Length: 126
Image 1 (cartoon, rainbow, N blue to C red):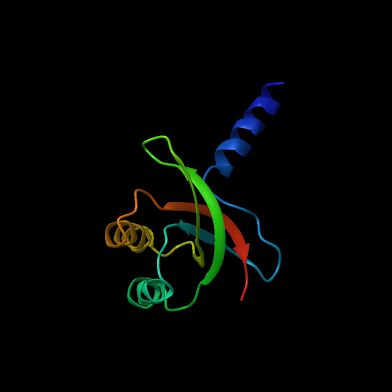
Image 2 (image 1 turned 45 degrees about the horizontal axis):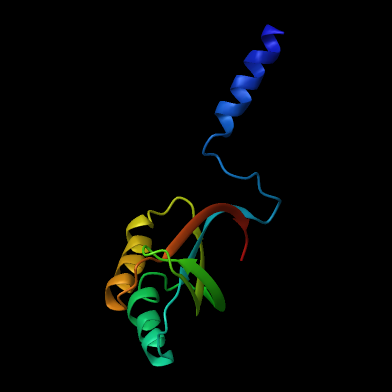
């Protein structure tokens, strides 16, 4: 029983922060997903992408048009169209500053209360 407990502790502690085990041809990477809302004109969005996102992630990203809802600080539920931004990047590259700059600039420029940013470990190959 003691050996089982030790093995379990080693297994659990060894997995913390390691990420997924990837199949042949795939590498451990990080997926960042942003959810931008607001009624932003198409040319304003394109300008934001060109000025803020492309220079920070020139290797590429994907943008998907969305429909969603959220509850603001005042408790009101808002439904709006928006954009999902998906970036898959190397795990060993420091990107937190770039990701936060995109989120903070969007909130400030378009007077938005929040922008959702979610990061997940993934396996990817190009």
